[in-house]
Image (tube, rainbow, N blue to C red):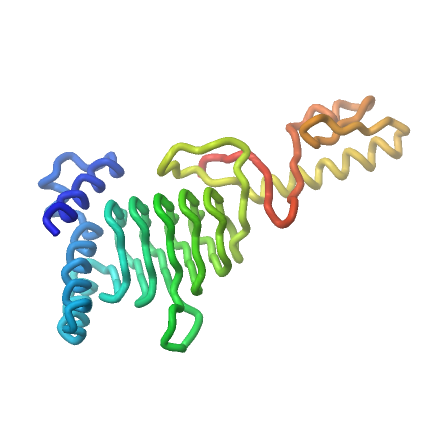
Length: 245
């Protein structure tokens, strides 16, 4: 238990550039306090003291603004940044080295006493305000964009944005805990521009060609073929670049 608590402190220092010292993290970070409270409450829950664990969870919520059911399973190296408004349901499972920003909900969509909350894989990043609802798995190394609403399984290494959440396949690998998310609207607009290019080229009698990357271009005209490559969605998965938000 002590080793886990120390790792919680190291994790917060490593992932928050605003952290100046371990003592500051221990005294001033409600996300760390919420994790510590939950680890104690979960121990009480697993040792057949449900009422005491629920009382402890309510006290933790009052002090930190984080509502974690004591039955939820949270791995090592989890970091809850800013913490306020985070809700984690009873049957939720959170893997190791996950980063959760404020306003995140790991909720259920069923009233049955079964597994009804999501399972979050290792090293997942969940952006501010995101909602992950239902009994499914978010694959390891995935990133959930801010305010996304995820209601279906997410493959490992994916990026999800939008309402409802759409799976984005990044065109280049991303470093761990990167906070950049794809610009889904920008990709859609570029796709529409490509269609316009095709129509204008056809009307002008130009030959429309496709490059090796699938992007459309005109052999003649006013430079329509100079736009960046456009990759249309395939099997419901978007292909595109990432942009800072």
